[in-house]
Each structure stands twice: as C-alpha cells, then as structure tokens.
Amino acid sequence: MEIKDLIHFLNKLEKKKIFYKLNKVRNEAIMVEIAVPGQRWEIEFIEDGTVEIEKFISDGDFYDVKEIENLFSNFSD
Image (tube, rainbow, N blue to C red):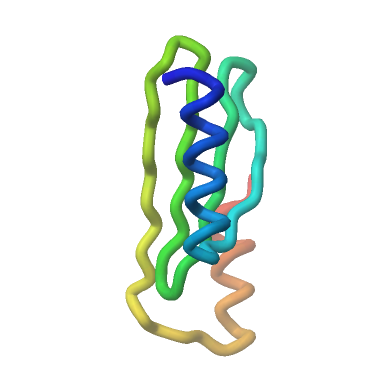
C-alpha cells in the first residue's frame, strides 16, 4: 500500500461520516483508530506496504464504578 491509498481510505471514512483518529504506536506504521457502535478498530498501515487490522468488539455488558478496582487489580504492575 502507498500513502495515496491511506489518504483515499481516510477520505472514504470522512465521506461515510465514520469517526477516526490517527496515532503512531510503532516506528514503522501509522495507525487509524476507528470507533463505531460496539466496536473499536485499529488499522495499521506499515511502511512495507502491509496493513494489519485488529478489532475490539463489545460484549454489550455495562459495569458500575466497582469495575475500576478490577482494572487496577488485574492490569497493574
């Protein structure tokens, strides 16, 4: 993939009114983060031309404030 393909992709997201933001996590890639109802997508355009897509899909459950303690208990050093 080339830079023009990334630009075309971003233009299509805007035309379809799909929210996104750009990020850079790896030295060799640009990430497009996309938020749609119930899902979050991370699409990385890598300098060698490959594209990697990771999707995070909600289980539809909602939690109360007590769930924050699980965050700290399970995911902190």
